[in-house]
Length: 260
Image 1 (cartoon, rainbow, N blue to C red):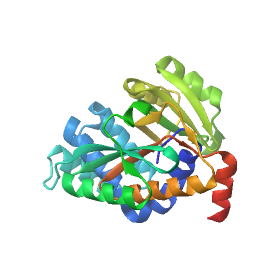
Image 2: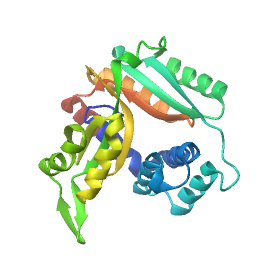
Image 3: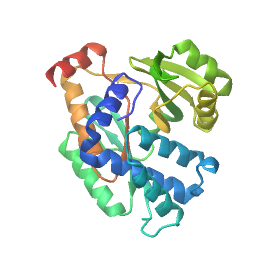
Image 4: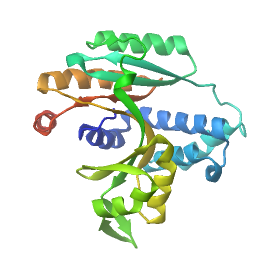
């Protein structure tokens, strides 16, 4: 689940640790296939594929799996599926808004599974446009604070990230405890990512995401319900991303972490 709150980073780390029983790997592979199908299998000429491969490598997807996905997507190897992107708009508990991005080879299956997960977990499907207007497409790059430089651990500062990315189009740098989140216009994400590379600053992921224009703070009870719905959606094979405008305050997040 992606959002502006610190929960986004917490979720990112937890997903990387348990890999959702292989579901994360499958979604990353699907991203690579689609990027290769749309822009070809040459990483240097296809920045979307470059970023999809980078993210998969950072999440420890084996290189063989990555290479095969590139070949399937680009047509160099048989077996690639025709995926369609579908966006579902959802209102969850406490009026929290969700955008659910699916990448599927079976639209009917995706629709049924999303509808079931939403209704079973206290949400309702919303009319097209009613939720999406609350979000803006932005480039989002996650930069870990601790990096390796010349074989030794080194810490990256906010000033270093700002200095490297401001001229390339970065609009904001958010401090998320163990990482920085660099926000830019969706069209500037490649320039911002390349400026980090030029400055020898490593990054975990570079994605175009839906960032909420306004967040809804929730108490502990509502947070539990919202996260239950988010988990149910993210657990679906056809769901690639779940974006939400929930804001889980630090004290509520601490209570939830203590109960894990």
